[in-house]
Length: 576
Image 1 (cartoon, one colour):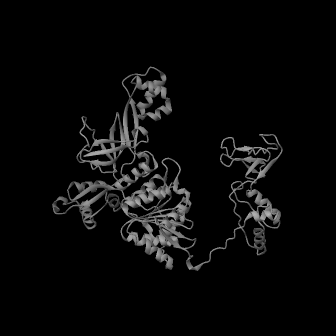
Image 2: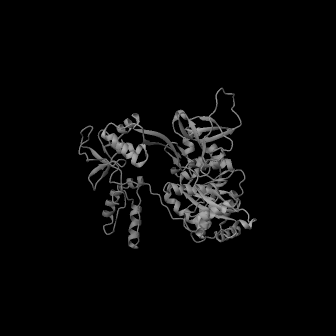
Image 3: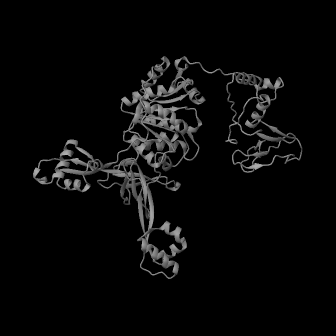
């Protein structure tokens, strides 16, 4: 068997497959992470294809694959296909695309181990270095360089005061645990007089098998178990370690009675057999999450899995709690705040089918799975689904690509769908499903849009409109509270010369600096650089310096003037 292997490195000159032979008995498959000779070194490779022979006869001998690094955390064929699509569509390296699916980006670590050599040192520092290595037995080269300096270590190696050997450490080896299994009890004479082994054999016969740690908890020692295995009546083996659910257990949550619109949405999407993309346009409070859970329940009954994407980690907790109450241990989460061990555990739970629902932010789209039956993208319009660092990708596009392999639907849920998605739904490329009413006929909040040009025409030059001022006065009279939102901090958003048009900008970021009145300076909101407020134009020297725009500081000042009896606080990055 010939394996086509991509070396797990981002070096551009190595972005091609290399052919190796697969030795008999080595269980290599597409997606396996393997150890291969590469030049004078050993490297980690990922098998992207297998075939019986080379396409063309070669006048050279292929090197063999030397070992299997991991089977649990390898790739399945669908993930390899998706990575190749990402490479072609987003114009990145294949190894970069493959790394998106990895918890451990590279499992093979090359270490240079130094030991005492045959030559004697000539300097006091050299004797100190040799004595230190002799006392420790051997040490990794990097630690010696940090302790004694690179020049001294390299000199000792050149003069054979120290010798070097290369060691490859596999950090992604499958985590295994020992198991004890019952074989037979035909020959009773074997255990004659061995009461504890007889007890263990009888317990093992009733249970069939169990982890060694379980039997240790029952009071049987590992030595006793090994002696029982030596008789042939039991078998000692290793299996992949079991994963655990790190999420808390929450009280149950029964499905809600669906509204007619929700029932229609579940019916349309649940009957999908072509793997279409659905734009679920549901107003706030229309029950989109309940539709998600009802559809997820149908998918789980078919033995398939669900991937739920949310735009931010902060939003993950809300939807996780609802899914946990409904589906319990079937739910795992994937996001950047988890430790490597937690990510690997949850990744394996989805890969081996222990859990069936994965909820997470953008990167959760790359989670392994046995068979995906549904992709849900909540708040699908959000820009955070786009990765703006190399390798760049759009999680929604990747979800649709993976869904096409499994033939499963993709739901793009939002109260404000992206314009492109909505247009495709109207054109028939996607399917539009709408929820126009809130659950329980709850009313929507009233919204009034005020055109500030009309306020200006009436002589109101404030940030606060007359309409807003009247509503605030009514609120205060009713002894209630109000929240005013403005997505600009500071007093004025930029400072400009009215004579020449010069705008004061940050020297580093080349963006307009914001005037902060309380601190009496200009500040860059990108790098926090500060400048004094100019009294004359730095460009033309005129005195026509004007402050434009409005921030939270200006709103606070005007509210104090308009509503002197009100208790007003400002909550922004400057005050907190």
